Image 1 (spheres, helix red, strand yellow):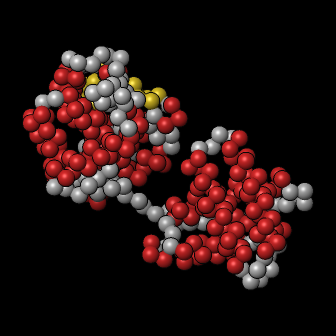
Image 2 (cartoon, rainbow, N blue to C red):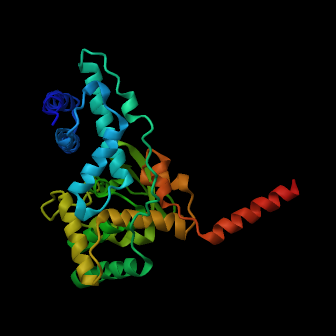
Length: 315
């Protein structure tokens, strides 16, 4: 039952966890690695045939995917993204073993040839009707309450719907960030993932009333999303606020990140926005992350082909 190998891998895992902590990896990242590697070691212990560390083969990885699928029967087969994450965890772990072990081990063959079909993942977003129902309820609350919280919530959610901001980015914004580019546009500095800064934009008429009302009681250096006691709204409360509006609008509860997806899909597929511009607006480091929002309609593809063909004919 490969008890000796399992114990050896557990010993490496204990040291690997220390390495991750010293690299200041987040608790969530460390737990994710540990979960994958503990499952892999459990899988090794269940294999009847004797396995040696020096002779591990790619078939072992495929077997591990089957093992994980059996553990998650109710959730169906593993998605390609999950397989890629698991493989990345295993690769870095075995690279660590290569360095730590005295036997000059080489695990490059273990991962050679592992290929996964890339799935075209269409991010979930709100359709036009659902988005409008949500916006109607946001506006209704302002008309009913006409208070600080109503205007704050409206501003917060509109920045996600119409500028594609993440919750964390909205919570870091201050009133002074907004600059009038012209009579139609605000520009503002956003602090994104990894504290990377970017400039993004929003139409003035979408949030002008909210900013005007809120600045009657707030200072330019104040954060946008604060309670009446001037404490920043907890991240989890933003989703609670959004769910409350969904309930009022009688629509399926949605997430703040889906509002970001809605902005991105509208930008590319409804308004024909440039994918490189969208990458900048969303703060993606890799354009491949942004490409998931490209969903060319057949007529657009046909039109592009005809234009290219005519161009070739004229040359």
